[in-house]
Amino acid sequence: MTTISNRQYAEALLKTLGEAPHKNHPVLFKRFLLLLRRRRDSHRLDRILALVEQLFLKEKKYRKVVIESPYDDPQGITREIKKIMGEHIFVQHKKNPALLAGVRLWIDSDIVIDASARRRVLNLFA
Amino acid sequence: MDFIAEQLKKEIEGFKREIQAEKIGTVLEVGDGIMRIAGLGDVFSQEMLEVEADGGNVSAIAFNLEEDTVGAIVLGNSQNVKEGDIVKHTGRVLSIQAGDELLGRVIGPLGNPLDGRGPIFEKGKGIFMAVERKAPSVIVREPVNTPLHTGIIAIDSMIPIGRGQRELLIGDRQIGKTSIAIDTIINQGRDSRYPTPVCIYVAIGQKESKVAKIVQTLKEAGADAYTIVVSASASSSASLLFLAPYAGAAIGEYFMEQGKDALVIFDDLSKHAWAYRELSLLLRRPPGREAYPGDIFYLHSRLLERAAKLNKEHGGGSLTAIPIIETQLGDVSAYIPTNVISITDGQIYLEPELFYQGVRPAVNVGLSVSRVGSSAQTKAMKKVAGKLRLELAQFRELAAFAQFASDLDESTQKRLRRGRALVELLKQKERSPMPFERQVLLLFAGTQGFFDDISPENLSHTGKKFLEYMEKLHESDIVGTIRETGEFPEDLQEKTKKAIEEFLKMSD
Image 1 (cartoon, each protein chain N blue to C red):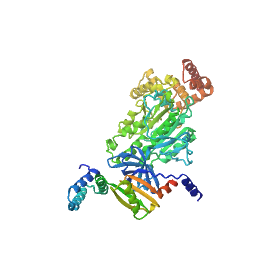
Image 2: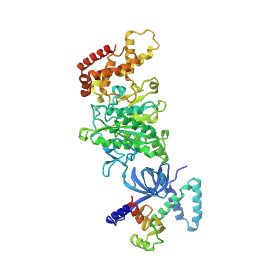
Image 3: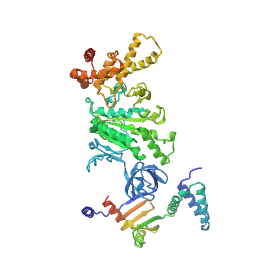
Image 4: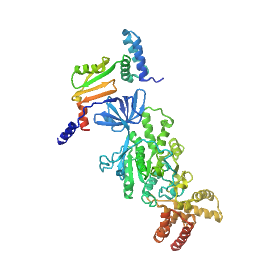
């Protein structure tokens, strides 16, 4: 059986869902899961879905920003980030008390800007 | 509390406002000393990575650069690493600190001390040498022309090793390979004609008890003053076993680039190949012959090519490599042995049959070769050892024939007696390396036929007494002259012949 990479799965799924009407999406997705099971690639599902999200956002020219902070829902930060990066950003918030203070920004899952107190404390005692 | 206050004070004084954006990856899976990372799209091959794990940062090296993921080998404790941990790249390759402070120490492949004697380098001291480096080019090298005496008569006379050469030690298990290597190290301190090289013994996958015994042996012989032991024991992870020889070579290169001579012994590269195979299979690289990855040749060729003799313009230093390969049931035509034989400048083959016949070191002179040859021999040794290999080969043929012949002519009997005497002279005990001037005298006496009439059982004792006699009565006029000049001219040969005759008369 030919090996199919995660990217190939993600691109195929995205294209299929993109071309089909919304009401068919659940059925198509179920078929996709069956396909993965048949090819014994179910364990790669979460990575494939992460790639689907990445490709979808890239297609729509959106950037994904995850704001990690020890506080609840920092609306102020979201507004500031939108001002800097423009409106085409998809913002998620993650609460992480371990940061102590400050924020950590994840941009497109591969760039991090760590302005947390935790990083400073770790650097202090490294 | 004072320490914390001090640290906070430093932080406040040196407070910087800049916050950096860093490209990161996340751990997808980890286990068996390797991990898969998502992200890190711009990482370089062999680049050092830092994993922010719970128990502290763990280092790794990027090995496989795939379409969506990066495969890395973990250098620390992979048990602290979990899925989702952040991985950052450092922009540098793995390096090891090198300096004179390493002499007499036992270290791991990452430069960490293993001998319990505390830190090796003071802060700011020591030079960082990249573990993986390009081999010296053709332009900076010169031909091998200086001997590296092992102290073993069979090797120094017929399979001479030069400084800057790669000579393979190959044989079955428990045949004396490590013993020859250790005797070589010990002899470097006793060879007064040439500068003592820095010796680096790289133990790859050896038992810790064996390494401890070797360290003790070197200490007792006084060899620890110029020896460094790099140990990745049998309980180390495959990544450390893989890195150990390169770390040893990097340390050797440090001394070579200082204009000094260095000797590195890789014990053994068979285990190194197994560790690399393990890593490659775990990283899902396509397996080839005997499940080794396709670049198994390159693994050893890039290591051994780093041994060189540099020309005067580049310091004149040298790095000699003695890799060891363990064969299974004497099979030198297996995959890894043939690979390494084709890379090195010769091999010393140790044969089990000779070992069990009592010929130790069990060097098969017929199958062993040194491609550098007599360029790496003193003139004195060249003179006495010139016909040795031929005489031994002729003896072996005649000995086989003589088993079936009842009546042999005088010349055949004479050859047989000569051959038996030479075989006995080449036997040597462990931990008894012999300086080259003594070897010259012993071989001269043997090849000139002075020992032909001595029974093989008494030859070892006679040889010992002869050398003691020469050192007591002819140290300045014969022994010392050979040692200092490295030559054995005709007049000295005549003097030596007379001395031998006197000795034999006294012994009678």
